Length: 295
Image 1: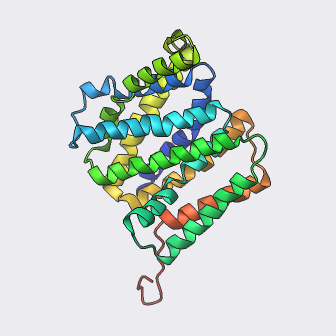
Image 2: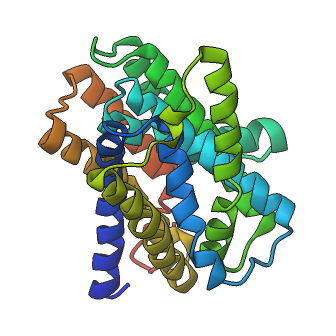
């Protein structure tokens, strides 16, 4: 990568880390259902009028949208609304590569090399450390909900692997079109079950809320995915995707700056173990001996 491309990748990573603070800002003024519905509505519209349909069967596009919109971000919003710290949310979501590897082994019987096995073991230990020795300011339910969101993130990656869309931006924009209506229907169902006035979900955001929604729709999703997809197309997954390991570090930093979120020593140790495990799983390491042969 050129220096300009490296700076672009780092900028996207910082934006994606900051996004978890943005989510907290949005949930201060918006109901979770309203936030999800508006975010994906404006991710899809008006972009669907300018971007042609993806080269993938629409059933897969719709399924991806539902999994990403409701399964991933819907659960993340719910966890953050219940007090899950922004930095920890980002870290747990990043365990998706670890879960993907486990799914590949358990479901598809794919073999692992020694480095991947070590990465799985270390990440699992780190995850267990956080769950067992978490501080009182992190609710167990929030951790479980976020971990479930990481499972859905893994499923969304499986769909991408299965469909192999040539234009990931088009795929994401069109998939977002299938999120708002199901969320609206769920809002009606939930309102009926809890005697909540439906006007609660249909209340328009204030100026800050609109800023959060537009930031998430255009900056985080459309611009972020566009830049990263371009870098992946040009330089490949092995060079580009390791940058995403900086997302939880970025999120932990911004959570500390804006919300004074501080992890305990044990949580920091668990986080470091997870990141080390993810590095072993996602970063291709090569060494050269004196005869310049890769070992």
